[in-house]
Amino acid sequence: MTRRFSAQLALLMGGFCVSAARPISAQVERGAPLPQRPPFTERLESQVAEFDAAGRPFVQLVLDVAYEYELPLGLEYVDADAMKQPMNLKLRNERVREVLLAAVAQLPQYRLEVTPHMLKIYSPKARSDSCNLLNTTIHDFKCLAQSPRMASMEVYAAMMSQLHVPCCEAGDVLDSGHPRTVSLDLQDKKVYELLNAIVAQNGETVWVALVPPEKLSDRKAKLWEIYGLGPGWERILLRDLRGTFGTGK
Image (cartoon, rainbow, N blue to C red; front, side, top):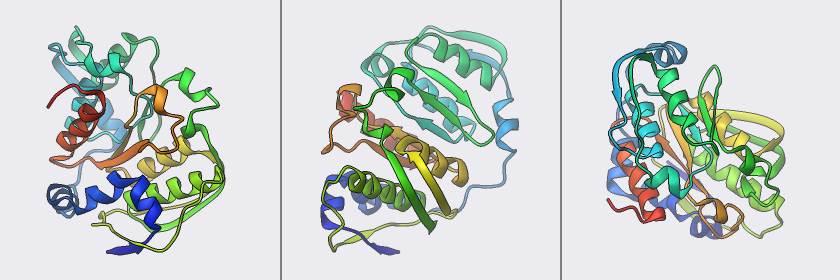
């Protein structure tokens, strides 16, 4: 599927567009729809007989759980400690929800919000920071039957327009599509709220802030990306984050 977007948008948000063109990403996203599975709340309440963080850092631990139990997630804030600091956490006979709460409790700058359709992991400080571009309010946002990535790109275009940064000239961007599209008509929502709405409605994706906190105000940075919850996507996501934070393969 081909959508017409700006050449400048494609350049600034290269990862959104390049991911669709990468053979492995396109292969993952064009795969068969995810099989039938229990409802989100039921997956969240699954019993975990033995859990051991085994020295994994917070971000990897959270993503491992999200992908194992197919939990839609918005990871709005990522810092160096969460990417690099090994965690010591061992639990027995706890639900998935309690495992995540116990992990978040070890990092005081993070919070976990559980909604009926997704998980949100965020920083209260970042949400209150007026310089954080994810807090930009979009007064009127509409998208109809878009794949999550294309909807995400429209959020980016709306954010840049709100910031009075020129964009949206002619250009072609390939999008390999997604079996479950989203349609939104929302007013006066912040960028992170729109991204959460995309993930919650789609039910088969996660979105992640791809920059350290000090770059959340950088208008030239690729601030976020949306990834599928299917096989292969966690590896791509972690590769992107490790590239940003210099934590190796």
